[in-house]
Length: 386
Image 1: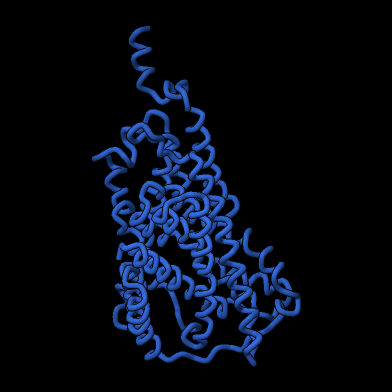
Image 2: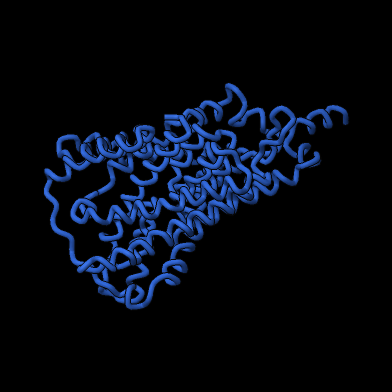
């Protein structure tokens, strides 16, 4: 019996009888729920399935010695890509190599919609300060409003690494819930007549324009926000690999193998970092804290504000434009590529099957990716980290 009890004390079942064990069970349920959303509801499965499984790995009772915070463990080594911030730029490399900026080049005024949607970042920054987060934590939390998971992780590692788990989970959760969150806001802020606006087919963009755009885009954006160069440099580099016509192999590698591998590792490690209980100098730095609840609430608010800001700004632009734009595409100004653009397109199709908005919505959508990275760079510069 003594040998059995000795063995039992080494199992995870033993830890289920310790104080606070219910917190691990809550996190295991959250991990299973993420996997359910990814598989059954098809909400960003490439993100939610790895994150959900990572949450389960990180919260298995008794397995803490092998977790992401244990020096030298396998997961700790993999977590360095998150902790040191080199996974997000690699994600941006893949995004750039898959992105077609043609619609944005053809209709550059739509970049204003991507910029308008970033209002959610700075509104959330102020909200976080009002909830008594310090200025660095507020900066990291604010970027959730851009609905850009890699940028949220990148900024958190610089400003508030202790909040990386809840910020990353909140950002990716709201990205996955774009089809649920955005339609009610869009319908609330637009009329049926506005939702039925047809936009002119954009002009054809030349190959030369496509090659010049990433070079000029990088120079301009990094001059505005030097701190964003790890993200924007990789984004535009990936895009020129795609558009140059002479680096197809490199573009294929970036848009397939690299981004797939990094997405797996990033999602798994972010999920595994959400340990329910993590004591640091006698203070619980785990996931289930009051700070995490505040971050999720602020994240939801920021996402709604960003969506609303994009739609309202599109309506404002129509006051001055002869050729009206469908204000629904303003909602695509958040960085959830291409889900926000798809939501706008499908919503337009509900009211008029002949109204094809996807290519138009992609312009503010990719502008939002650039805008969120610039916003992160601006915050880094203001807070003295660039």
